[in-house]
Amino acid sequence: MSINGVVNLVFSIFSLGCTHVKTETNLHTKEQAIEEESVKMMSNLEIIKSTYEGDSSEENGKNLRKHLSKSATWKEADGFPLAGVYIGFEEISQKVFKRLSTEWTDYRFVVEGYVDAENRVFAYGTYYGTYNETGRKFSARVAHLWMLENNKIVSFEQFVDSVPVDESMK
Image 1: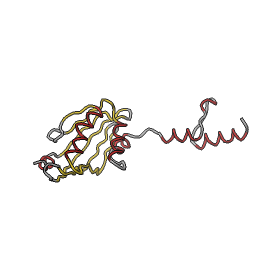
Image 2 (image 1 turned 30 degrees about the vertical axis):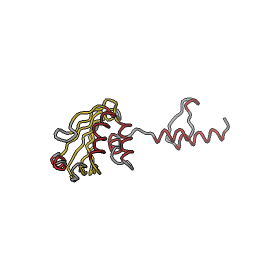
Image 3 (image 1 turned 180 degrees about the vertical axis):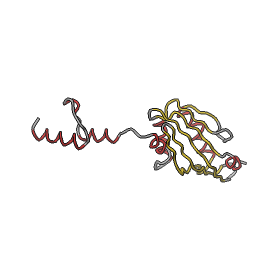
Image 4 (image 1 turned 180 degrees about the horizontal axis):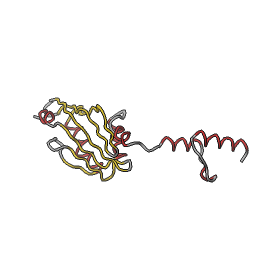
């Protein structure tokens, strides 16, 4: 390796914050190192925020699918129209999100804040929507409790004032 090659290698290593290189086989190009740096592990809070704060509901859904454990449990509150416990993304998608998108117009959760407590993240705010069969609108206070293990969502539980939701369906 030429002196210019060595200088460039050293510059690349130190500019990326690396402290040592054991062998030439461990060397990376600057592009590979930058790509690896950008794929850092997300915090639990960042994971949950990514399921609410994307540019579109499709992006939020993709982020949920990406971060959801294959055997994750999803509990919709007792008394809520979608009450029940669902396992895995396919069942959650069919029994929760498909129904919300077909039975309601402009159904949404406006997040007001988060509470990050180690492997638990709470999101709280207000649901809004219009029930298609009645044309009646509602707003209801809600909190979501997310549990995570090893950067994967393992459970979700909904806490909601279901009375305004039920009233909109009558």
